[in-house]
Length: 185
Length: 110
Image (tube, chains in turn yellow, blue):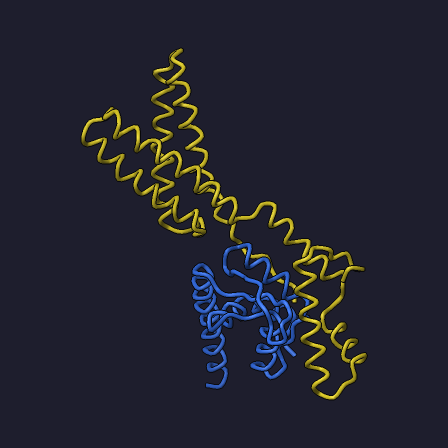
């Protein structure tokens, strides 16, 4: 396996354990150690093919769906927590709008926890929340743009909302993160 | 012997279904599939491991290093909640394919 270029310790350890199990099993049926070893090696497959299959995982790991989902979930969580904190602290909105925002951001907190815990993005609930967030943040960006001013706080607010819109749009547009790769057996 | 494409397509549902029963390791998974299929479903042994790793990366499985009966290091896999959901989906889809095929086959004998 080393000769085939599989160098990572985890696959090597696992393949070695597999070979040992197979050798023990073969020897139980009366074959001598050398022949049992040869049989196990031939059964485990071609080294170059195996390397190719493990290499697919490296690509997956780099853009690991689970990791991306968790990062997006964490961004949602930070934004929802911040907005809820500001709402409670400064009471800047009227009761009806406040109630609507409260429901939406609490749903956002729930969605972000689901994402951080590894729920797939395609889940209906996450996509429903993402639609809500995308619509509202787009609305805020448009309103902010109309009332465009030199106020640095307003510009920062628009920027934050745009980032939030981007994250929500990502959650809507990339449901194929968890798409399985066809196995070669 | 079963066609290569079908063997590859059935790998994930079989692994999930086996691990839903109890925690397992690569060699045991291969042996059980071999046994249950009467030797007709044969995987290239080494190819199972990249599949297991991919399923772990996708959040369907989790793993831990443990010890075998002889004290050697061994990696055990178990199914996660997402894995159970994926397994249910696989069962639903394979059952549908099976029922369509069975229906068509029945019609041929009518």
